[in-house]
Picture 1 (tube, rainbow, N blue to C red):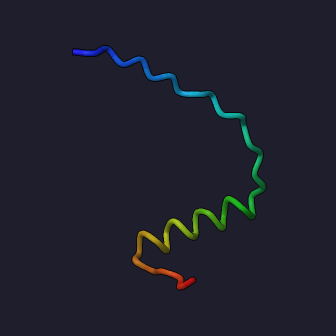
Picture 2 (picture 1 turned 90 degrees about the vertical axis):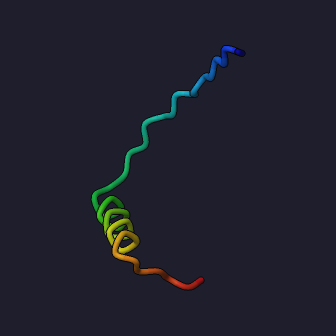
Picture 3 (picture 1 turned 90 degrees about the horizontal axis):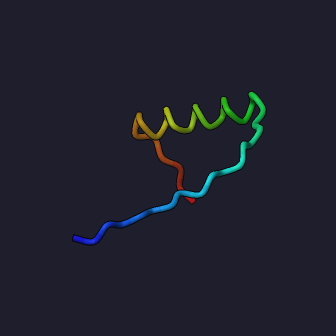
Length: 39
């Protein structure tokens, strides 16, 4: 069996304001509830 050594790069910390976090949380909740948006 081959031993795979996967290296995961470290991502930089990203600062996000509270309004953006609220919008992301709302979008995740809407998606979980089955709501979708047409493109």
